[in-house]
Image (cartoon, rainbow over all chains, first blue to last red; front, side, top):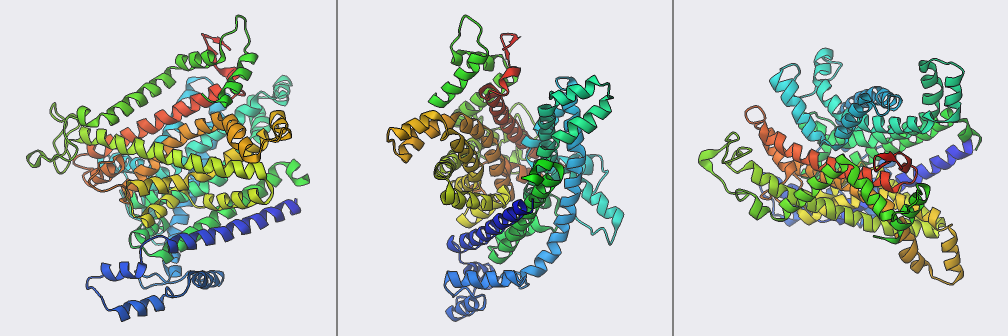
Length: 318
Length: 309
């Protein structure tokens, strides 16, 4: 088990290294000079070459690209993600503001998606072929096919504008005003949960169907166990493993979805920061966000591997 | 049809062998014809493609023709879905928007599939460090959420139609490489590959002539399902405003434009969203059904001629 985990950890570090390389390389080699973008977007135009050169020097953009990478990597290792060109702040400050917001939204969405998705999947599997199963499948399919930004808009139209039950946008920290914060969170959290929820439902259903016809399940029925006991102790416990994998994959799905949901609901999180930074060609912020995201996804994958060892004794031995 | 799908269907027909023997391809086609949902989706897609191709003749108005005296008109006989803030006909813009969605969906998937197939086959066939290098790079790409990656690439490239296709195509490469790598690893151990190698066939010839065709039915199913994903990604980029040129009507940008008038004129946002959803649903359904028909493990549940095959 430890050997397996160490190997996975080593792979994760290699993947992380490649990510930094990709993030940095792609940002630098593609067209678009950040300094010129910044200067021309300003209200007054600076065409002074000396000024441009000075700024380029100030942000270290005049060095060769490998040196820029090393500077950047050194900073990252020391926990410094660089300076934002357009905002005049450090990337750390921007992320410190935005990441908790997305974390809060993302964790709530994740919990909603798994708490609803997994039971729905189990229900669909044990009632396979009935109208319950069909209804759940249609809902799950719609969850995968509906564009998330559009679902957000429909939610706003129905629950915010027409029924007037919930606020249509904005974000309040739960520490300043808890009830307002929860009210503002309900729509975006459900919107963001929809994709992973549908995924969890489909995955759970097919995972349950894989085991539901196994001999030991028939034995459990034959020895007179109640349906509840058969399902919870024999079917779910043995079939849940693939669902855990998908739960790990929900992390990139939620962060990706946050880009759109935060834009629709006007939430000052990481996703909206990424969109704004991309429009402003503020490389440093985008790099920081992609890096944080990649680390989160890599950690989620490692956790999935760890839980495999816990859930499946065969992995522990191997 | 490729050699690959032939072999899988033959294997399935052998399981379902009931004399007199029917051609395996005919079995598959008849099974597909019996699935109402599949047929519905397939017909919808065919109609959509025709409408998109002949948009100038089908659409009642040019997509950018403005009627300033008739802005924000409700649905009527002249404008079935009403008009937008500049008095442009919503239905016509939807029809033209189908062109962008379908084009981006199909071309981006073709791009990602062709690159992913090459990378995955090479990785799976040569194994060792070649596999390690390629697949770790794919792992790295996969740690970045697809939409964030596509968005970043599109923004960096500039954001015209071809840039959007490239951005979405590149961000969708990794799953193909993974699929193809796994397929290649299982195919290369089969006897016919071993004997080909024994006869002196070169690696590239085996890969291009035998490994890829044999795995192609699986890849094709996956491609069908990915078209929906690519269409969603394009819609998301257009919605955020990093998409195709502003004058080109796209479903995503129509949703974004309508969002501002949600309270007074919700149909402007709802209609293009329904179009996206229906199209993506149809592609996913067709892909799902094709997989059921081509995957031997799932074939036991398919209904053939009213009876279980």
